[in-house]
Image 1 (spheres, one colour):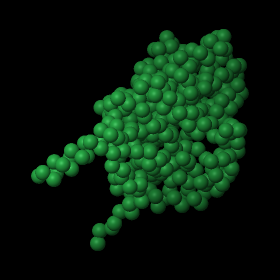
Image 2: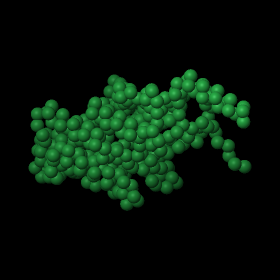
Image 3: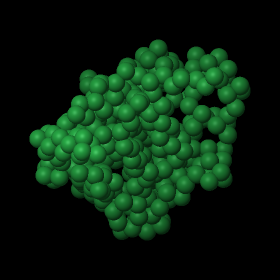
Image 4: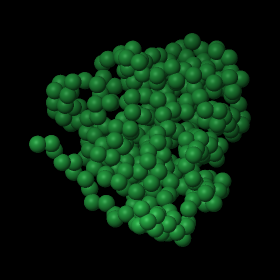
Length: 370
């Protein structure tokens, strides 16, 4: 007997309700609080995703639950505690703010779009926010991942989660996905403006600029993932926009996990090598992260600083992520509008209840005549 899909209870369809358009801004995720228990819940979901760790489940899951989670949760919680804010996790705070500002920016452009944010791992979940958008009457939803560079470990995992949600929805909304924007002119310009503003505030440029991206296992590149190439294209376009030569900027990859070979060069050894070859002042930016988080505020701004200074460097400056920068919100809005093309988002384009009621009455009359 074929299994019956477990459709969830949905609000009854309301005849005459104007169809609405929504955007789901999806980021990676964060623990609910900086405690070992909360971090363990988060890591269980994150590291349990087969898109993230491509090791056979029979081998990986016992290792994850028996060794990694018991050992890593407390250590990671201590790191989260160093960057936690009164408002909560920086990643969640910035992502929520971006969603609100994006809706405001779209509204200023005359577009009626409902924007929500979600986390692939942790809260608020993608499923819960899609439920909210659907309950708000959204019959068209654009899923906008907060990942400029495409990777199966990030962007594709968001698509997986949306697909999982869709399996239990009877009346599905129309769905679109933004796949990548690593070379978007507005994104590159927002990155450059942020770096230039940092230099203006500090009153000087560094001897060298390091662009650190999140790492992934090298095998993902060999299997056809575009992430490595897209990171390099972002770095090249950003360096050109800043007017930097090849000897003034370096691209590296951070956050290596496990013993397998990951994309190189690694960030911390690169910082040490720069210091040892005589670079006294280094600035580090993380273009692949659109919101500051553990990987930028602790791994780079704290651990990276220590590694550079201990190796002989004299000045280390971390450049914040895009966060809520107006240039970035404008670029994000422009990206969204391109992918919303053809969907009626302006108030003048959207049918009003009276018009929909008239259309329904005409359709019923035609049916009676037939």
